[in-house]
Amino acid sequence: MYKFTNKNQLSLPLAVFLVNDTYDYDSRDTAISTTAMLRSVRSIILSMQHDTLEKEVDIIDLAASKLGTAFHDACESAWKNPEALKIALTAIGKEDWQNRIKINSKVLSKDSDNHSARSHSKHSADCR
Image (cartoon, rainbow, N blue to C red; front, side, top):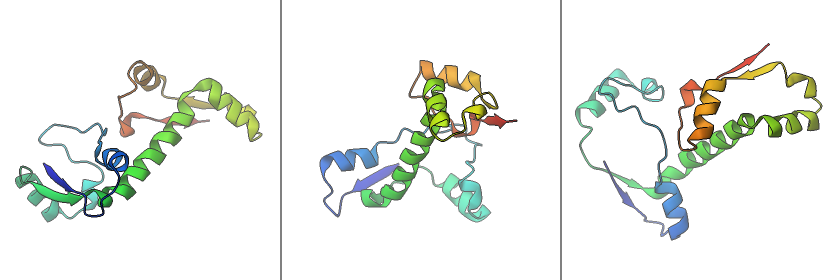
């Protein structure tokens, strides 16, 4: 649980953007994210033992992560629309790649039905 502060008095639209979290978290007690695995075992265990503690975070500290997520989402989106992908590949002289790239179609159909669904680990591309 987080308690957010706004020590830099960021504007309301920017503050809402930074605090809004659309990540698709795994709610299983035994789940450990790939990012968490980069931390030490001691750090992981302590955070799992004290996950109910309220943590204070200034919203400016969310900016880098939020911009990274926005960039990732935009890159992912560029590959999801077959017509837009065809136009983009043609524009950069790679139109012959259109049939060489296979995007996981199950994930695409699921995501196009529900635009809020996000799961980074389930998306894949197969370049032949």
